[in-house]
Amino acid sequence: MIEFTAEQKFKIIKPGSVYYFADKDYGLKESHYHVVVNHNPQNEDDLIVVYSSSKIENVLRRAQSYKYPSESLVKVKKEEYESFTED
Image (tube, rainbow, N blue to C red; front, side):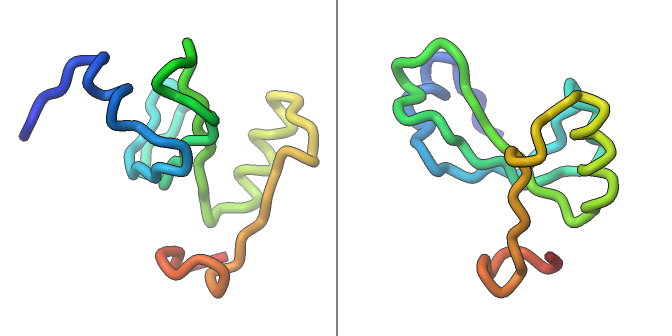
């Protein structure tokens, strides 16, 4: 495996990049796709990503517990994104 410094990582991350990992800080035990949504992640202090899950009820429950607005949730059908195996 190749190891990168934090500086190197931010140089290769681009808006719309997709990564597959388990975010243990957010309580995710299974890996999920994460999409970078920053406009310019190389020059911003924070990296903003969104993750996807087929377990819609769990996502809705988590969103309610964190008091996320319902408008922040996006449902994507598997027909819309070929890498997804479920809605």
